[in-house]
Amino acid sequence: MGSLREELRGIYDRHGKLTPELVHEEVKDEAHPLHSRYEWDDAVAGYYYRLSQIGEDIRSLRVEYVPPQGGEPQYVREWTSVRNDPQRDGYAPTEEVVKDPLTFQIVLREMERDIAALKTKWQHMAEFAEQVQKLLAL
Image (cartoon, rainbow, N blue to C red):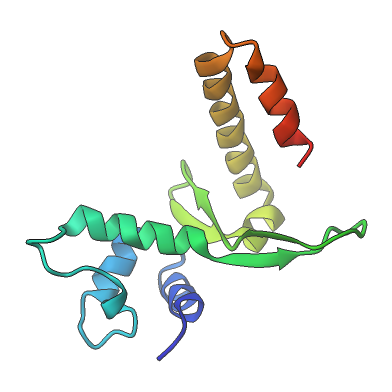
C-alpha cells in the first residue's frame, strides 16, 4: 500500500492536476489503498463530505523548505491551490507552482484578493492592523 503522499502524487502525475473529485473517482474502488481513509456509508456521510475529507488530506501534507539565503527550515504545504488556470485548476505541487512564473502570478493574485477581502471584513476593528503585524512577524 502506498502512502497518502505517494498515492496523491500518482493521481497528479496521471492527470496533470489534483482535485478532490479526481481523487474520489480513483479511491472509490474498494481495492484502492486510500479507500478506507474515507467514509463510504452514505447514511453517515455523502459525496460532498468525502470531498471535504479528501481536501483536508491534500492540505495536510507538508514538505521541508530551506530558504535559499539560509536560515531555519520551514514546513510548507506540499500542494498549493491553483484557480483560474484551466490547465491546472485544483492543486499543484508547491515546488512546481513557485518555479512556473505564470502559475505563481495566478497564486499571488489570489493571495492579494484574499488579503483585500480580509481587510474589507476586519478594517473597522482597530486590532486588525495589530493582528496583521503579528502574522507578518511569524
